[in-house]
Image (cartoon, rainbow, N blue to C red; front, side, top):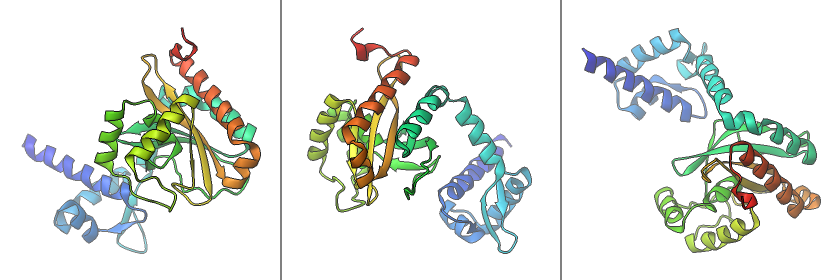
Length: 258
């Protein structure tokens, strides 16, 4: 009996993960194909998930998406993250200073996950969303975290996750990226220009915990020309300072040589 309940729970989680990865509502047959279950089984599980508010069904079509209950749980989780609370005022200050999009991300399984964002009052057109994942090799936040890791660990991440080219400017050679990471490590902040999205330049810095491990990163992103007009080095130094102060609040003081 216990094994049956565990199996049902695993199937429910598989379905929720499929819905989370889908950009739009999807039908029972497609969900079944992705999780390897008969549509009648999928339909029964979806009925329960809908009843509990974890999944919503479109009125017009037999298609499903994540429900409000998932959002409630996610918001509570994010609010409980100490790093998000500590960084909040610094994100607001950076957004106010530069009027560009500001992000806070966490590293997870060789990728970064956006957990907070401050919008710009100007037109930007970024694809980033809270909860979305992104690769490390072509994002400034990812590069800033990679720059803190030993070379062998970076190479393992790149080998495991790959280095797909998202634009014609994406770096897809590990050796070229490693050389760049060394420069970023010396500067204290990383940058990518149109490697992830055409027309967008992003500057980021890592955040360290008390042990000296990079546990997050913050960034400022905006159109290339606008960012250059505001000064890449100026933004870089300001964001590095913010990252250092957040790290200090988390108990990391080694950046001052203490």
